[in-house]
Length: 348
Image (spheres, rainbow, N blue to C red):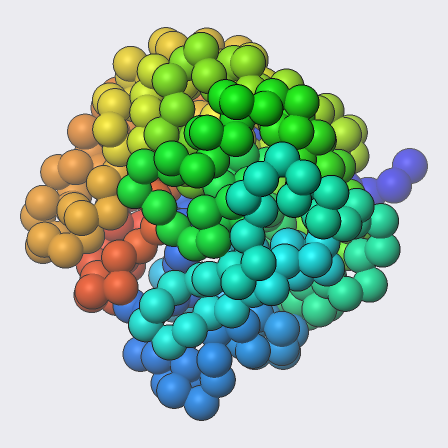
């Protein structure tokens, strides 16, 4: 009889399994980031991609954040896009500019340029970040790995960077569904291998970020995206919780649930109680405070936290989080105040 690891009965893992918890677990997207003085000091000496590719530093920034905030889970410090580099995409993070891909996929024929990711060797630094973060973390806290979802990675690969309307992405999707399915199939297989490698390296759960899926309507999502997201989630190691998170369009929530995941991530554009009803009570949910609330004050933060906990109504399976990442101008003490408020109100 093997003894269960300490993290197995953590509040986060219990909530992901929809079991009773003594208090609502909370972690925050971008909990290591520009709002922290320690992070900014490291970034003065190291570029963003360099930080992501230096496991000792990537582990350090996350471990500092977990300690400072008192959260119930860590997530590896990494980025959605480096998976595209060994697939043949020329990626750059220019200072102040955000990510740029210098050889984007523009025409159906370009899809063949995207290399099938069978060798994860070029991404070994991510697995080493998992190992070092796991080694430095309290054994009772779970560690999340993550990846971009196929649609969001395709959006970057086609647009060459961030986009307001995803016009090029939608044009390829709608005019050549065969090329689109080939592209997303290749990305889905890569993401599944990548997440399973993070799990093998020591991650207890994984999150799929579909940051751009909100630009789609339900019919487009169902036809062109859902099958590929589903294939990723179906390929994840059995028993490992998957958080399936998309932002921007709450009408997609039932479809996210259909695509899979033991936990459905909710952004702030919908009430948590309405979202959970749409997702189905057979799933755990994660969310969903508007990150801008952390720019206010302790009184407002506590009021909003309590409102979301009241909407969850003590139903097992709620993991508290923001509806997206912490904003860079957030005071650190406000993030701490949120964590404290969630623990205090939910334990009561």
